[in-house]
Figure 1 (cartoon, rainbow, N blue to C red):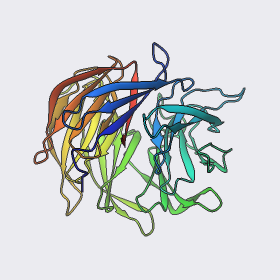
Figure 2 (cartoon, rainbow, N blue to C red; figure 1 turned 45 degrees about the horizontal axis):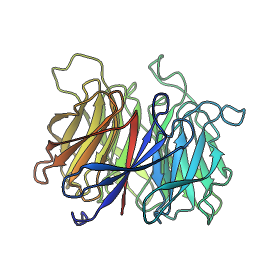
Figure 3 (spheres, rainbow, N blue to C red; figure 1 turned 120 degrees about the vertical axis):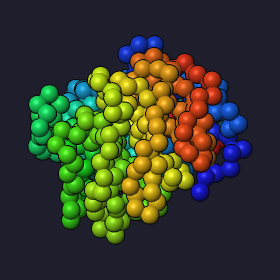
Length: 363
């Protein structure tokens, strides 16, 4: 089910701070047009690239995608409070992510822990959240081990995302370096990531799994593979956390000959469609989901009107898709056809330095 289209949202944008970025940007989104209006920005340390909003919507967390923190080989995670009237952010505190290059994080649905994926170090960790929204030191840290077939990108583990299932019982870490999705049972009492009875699922060698999303029915899941530009579809058994592959499809047109790497994946709130971003082809690919089997049928591609759409967001009503073109410093708004899943540019283009991640929150 989608929310009502008259609800207004804040859009929070994480960025890379190598150029002119001020950190995290806050916008008001017009629910009728999908246009973004600048509201505020917050200094958030170096490279606050990926964001996660606390389920109580009082706090937001950002990875600091760096290789050294506090004199150690580690990145960091920053915590902010959200002003309930304006949506503006106030810095709370920062903690080590345990490993270098954190690139993705999520908050479990109880709001007790932040889970972090460290790309550079190939590790994951759990950070407790205090009653004041501040982060405590990690209660668990898991170092992945191994390699895969691509010597340039897969000679060591590279955890690229960490996602909890809807029931909040399991966490799934897509590791690009291992060609595996690591599966952990969540222990929310001790703050531990316990390897599942089926501790991983393997994808095709050289695929490079990156981001991961669940179907709202809770019966299917989809991973986008960066290195070979594919989607892999799975059935999901939430009783035991098991994934079973059912299909792999290309995210690129059959006649494309250049270099391209995928980035992000989102299932539409209705469960009818899944979308993925291609960097190089610079497009959003659209597939229709067979809700009886979870299998995918190709719908089309829509150019993102910019370069390197690293991530994108679908607003909670399922009305608009906003693509973040990292290399051309723009966020472009598209309207989603609810019957076909196709995208139509609205003409709204927002200029943001090195945009990476978009997260929505009701105003």
